[in-house]
Image 1 (cartoon, rainbow, N blue to C red):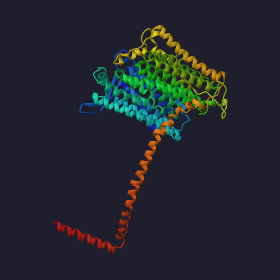
Image 2: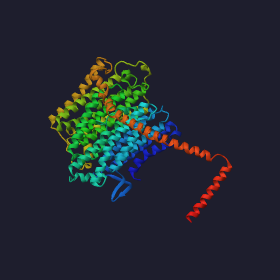
Image 3: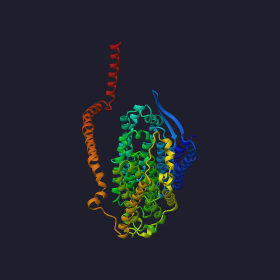
Image 4: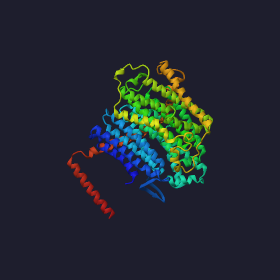
Length: 629
């Protein structure tokens, strides 16, 4: 059996088995089944690594079947495991396995964990479909599949009306972006007569295609990426998606689904390298998103909302890297972000679990005494995302800053400020949650407890990866050659990726700035929340109020877009219901009443009348027969 088929089969099998039989199985069996299926996919992917590694242009392909052939235009269900797709596959299945293990304990109290693991397996299947597809069509199927699974998982506890609303919001906003993706695919078919990567992208790389066409396709595909990867203006769904169970946040909104947009742009590197206008658009949209997400994160008190806006901001960093042509660097940050952000979300889930489902950091404090493993691993995640020297986030974020420095000094300054805000709000979160005095009023510190091994083991593994993950692409000033990821991806790129290398003095300066940013964020938050023991801000006035209310973007969207659409829908419904349905009903009513009264006179139960009707009918039939004979 083709290894790609095996990788896809296991999560699909888990989805079916838990979906059909899970409710009849013990909780431990159904949850173990879900985790085992993803682990088997991960092991299968690892087993294929060497085959691809030893052949510089190596890949494994599989054509399942052909959808249809329209005058030579083939639409295939085909897949390819190359250097880019196997990298993403290992992230999806590796992080996915840890999150499934974590979920076995986290969802143990739920009434129907089998349904949860069924949805989670189906999500992994669709994410694998997205990255393993060898054409835009299969990518689109996976793209829509993860959107559906996101809706199901965000609204998993749909009995809460606000959770259901968050799921609908995510679904609708992603569909807006998906329209751009679909239009881009239509343009690809129209201009290249195919949706296969190995046919479309080499044709673009040749440079014979009109720049207008390439730029148009690139921008439309980026609109799709904006929705899936939560960029301005299609970003407000991701913070609301925290309504779902915490493992959902870790898997979908930190490590996999939200990075689909970055994967799409990296896959289409040849296209974007020849579309400088589209690249500039990506740069400035990503920059604005990175800054906006970081500013809002400064004044959020919901532990998951802080991490959600941090994710929005970090996705902005990744798109900034793409906007300056640093595709390897963007994927490097995707990888390190998967490690430390999954760690932080799962750590937040452990905290929520330990304080009996509370999420407001204003009611926490001093938890490190009661949750030492959660605290240490959360500290590692905080250090990594904040850019502590030699941790994974330091290397990947430093690469982004260095590339932006060589491209546009204004963008560099803004991004450095966003990085400073990242360190500030992350240490604020750490100190207010784990340090200082306990601030709970409706529960006692003695009630707080550490999570069990099924939850802490994934935290420990992710913490180790967050420390060592930078080794995957060490910078040129340390290696004096390309990092591992850069050399690994080089055969995948059809157009040479120019990597910026600074002289020693410039490199030392950039590193110094990065270290200063980390130290400033740490010192500011420590001084405010540890030394001065200040309480979490309520955001009741001034700029703090604006940040706490997320720049009122949701309110603006509701007033300018949602409410007018709802009003227009209500008017159409009223017109349809009142004028059409109501009018037709009452117009027909007199006719029906008349025919009813007439029928009552005919059907009166008198046999003599029935005989007369029968004789009359016979006479009529005979007369007609004679007339037409």
